[in-house]
Length: 68
Image 1 (tube, rainbow, N blue to C red):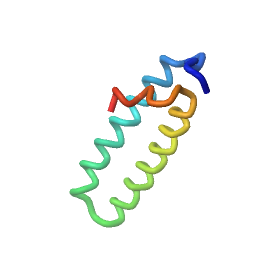
Image 2: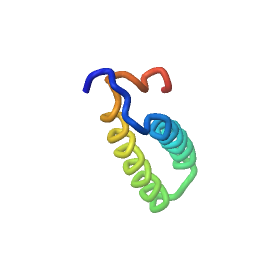
Image 3: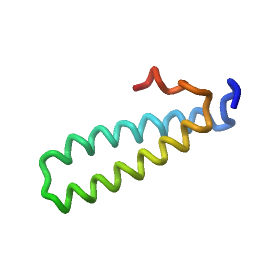
């Protein structure tokens, strides 16, 4: 993809920020939980990370680097 932004770019940008924030929160919360709860949180993190990958593919390379 060139340097074109997707049609709904503000929504995708907000989704990216929200997912990243949730992942960071879950990673912190995961440290204080039991094994079963950790596994559930790890699954959520993996789902959120896969959504982030989908969002990143819609944007030019390195578009979100400054947000991390």
